[in-house]
Length: 281
Figure 1 (cartoon, rainbow, N blue to C red):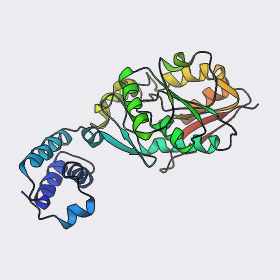
Figure 2 (tube, rainbow, N blue to C red):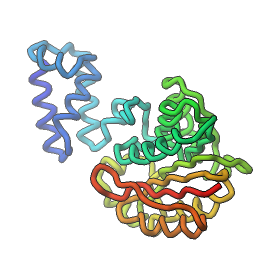
Figure 3 (cartoon, rainbow, N blue to C red):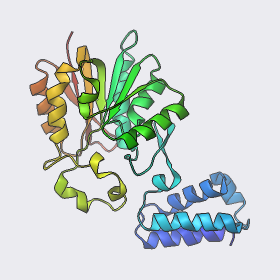
Figure 4 (tube, rainbow, N blue to C red):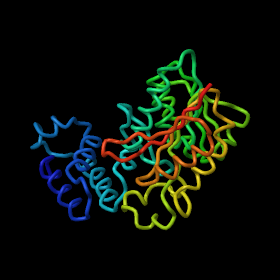
């Protein structure tokens, strides 16, 4: 079988299983296994695929056809122009979350010295490590309850070559007594009753990182209660929220941070994706 024949076979099979992007996923798998660029796959389409590589291609195709996200299959995801290692212990970084990083980055770049940053519910570390890479003057701490997730974040830290401190604990328990200039978080926010109806690819992701309780707001309530004790004077908090959750999370921050400037940031689809609170000095 040559490259062109396998690509058609893979696209057709993925399309039959309801894969939303069969062309892209087939190409990503082929690029990884064959160690070829998109252009090379096109110009060398008649090249025969050696049997060992064909076996690997089919194994990955089987996994994708079963619904496993291609990022888990390849072990890597793109985010903020960087590559992050991922597996089933962490959420896959998404473009939605780039709105959170960009909002926090704008705030960070206005701060003198070495502002302290906390990535709460860090998972793969995509938020905090992106900030550490793009704002190298920041002192970044990542915290997560899951030791497996922190293992992935630590591997990403090494591969990106950035400085960050990693802590294990339940929300702010990992940073007791500490205050930060910027807190950024993408906490679990899917209502429990919605989890079983999620897209099949999303159901491969860790439930602990998705389940936001009965109304999806459990973690926001906990974060809002504790945020005043962990924000430095003039500090700011940025929270990613699910579609339609912004008004409720705004209300939580207003109550927790009296007098703070609160607002939202929309993502590329026009959805209010980030809720922020900025305190005075």
